[in-house]
Image 1 (cartoon, one colour):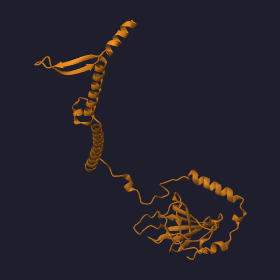
Image 2 (image 1 turned 90 degrees about the horizontal axis):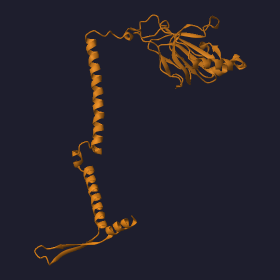
Image 3 (image 1 turned 60 degrees about the vertical axis):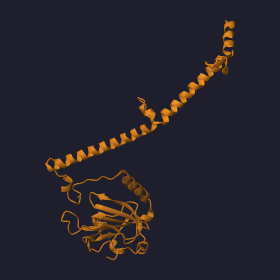
Image 4 (image 1 turned 45 degrees about the vertical axis):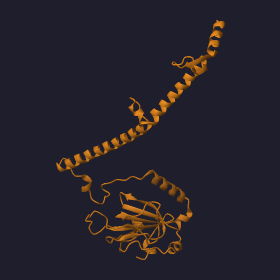
Length: 287
């Protein structure tokens, strides 16, 4: 077996002479080549690889590839993806248009009733809504009560601290109910002036701005010297929690003359608190 393998290897390496003769002149030699079986195989292999490379470049970088069944080049694939996205968008818009037209047709045919919200009064009264205290509000109240329970200074109010602030008048109306701590009335009621703005009595930060079931829209402002001002029964609020306000800045408004809801309260309730103790606003504000 070894002799046969060596014999085949020797035959592959053997060199042969290829001579090309002229038929008209047989005695005249035209070309002469010296070749071997191994060189022929090597040449055929390189020719095959070059042919494959040329065909690959032609298919990839020329339009010829589009003629091959099932072949999609990169540019065509990207264009197909973009077209599919456009088709999806157009389909969604058509569906929306059909729904819109169907709704309009149903309204014109009288199959859709009017929205019940349009029949509700502009002002939400305490009889029609019940708002519970949030967990954040309960936690704040509990923390405040625990901190002030053993604070001896909270039981005594320094009048000079409040008078030095030079408080601003919150509204132009007259006082229709005075401060009466014995009756549980911890502020004053100021008659509303339709369309009049409700203004901050001093610089501070809004710590509450929300609707309450009993007092309507209410806003609370924290001022210097541990003083808090509370504005209840507002018609609309103009500030949010965390907003900084300056003295005399509008924080809410009264209702206008067009509001004919007689159940709404026609006054602004103003309270002043200093270190946890209610104060008579009429003592510190020139109404």
